[in-house]
Image 1: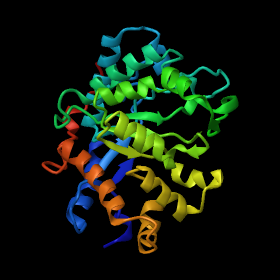
Image 2: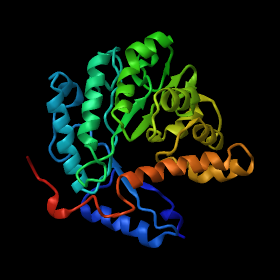
Image 3: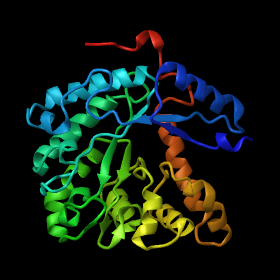
Image 4: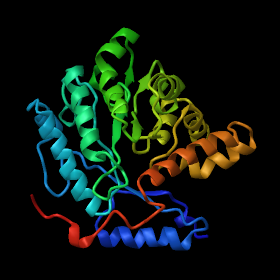
Length: 304
């Protein structure tokens, strides 16, 4: 099999023609014929553009916010997308941080209500309907809590502050049955989020009962090398054991996990667990029933 076909998803590609061409390769030219999942940053609209997240939050209108996500889902799914890297629910209280406009502001109650509204809007009541997309709450966790407002920096705070001020919107998204969670770049208690077992397994899965899959942020596994916790093979193994199911872009899982398995640094159960969760997401999206469900050139809405 062509090495280039050893992928499970494609990001930042859409339109019915482009998606169909890639999906056909996956379901006809690979050993297991597993369909691809297509993801994109559908943040505040797709073809129809809505105000940025901070602007939407200023309305305090949950029905309107949910409707904006519903419209975005309809447009994105018609364009071949099944997965959006949204909502971003990071609570922002340091004006030095450069991504404040992407979130819902400083209030955890408001942020929690918006998180639930966005997840409902994107996912609807049935992910197998072709006008829905799977949501991905991000960035888990405490991304805006980085010291000095410096991106990728460590977040060092008490558990009381963490649970009271920063974690509620993520939990609200989980309570709304969000399909996936994206890790953050920063450290939490001195451990990068993408390798933080307490964060991803103890808190997210066991305390909050999250059942979806976990994906890293863009190149987050590779970024952990600069945090000093190991080389690519080591950080990939640590991420998998901590609970990460999908490595976004880096290819660390693809290139190193086989060797880590041979060295008994990880187990077959770790790999099977991650594969199961990603395959389950594709099943929930209806891709195994119809790999071409999510696009229709005729149905691509041009405006509302």
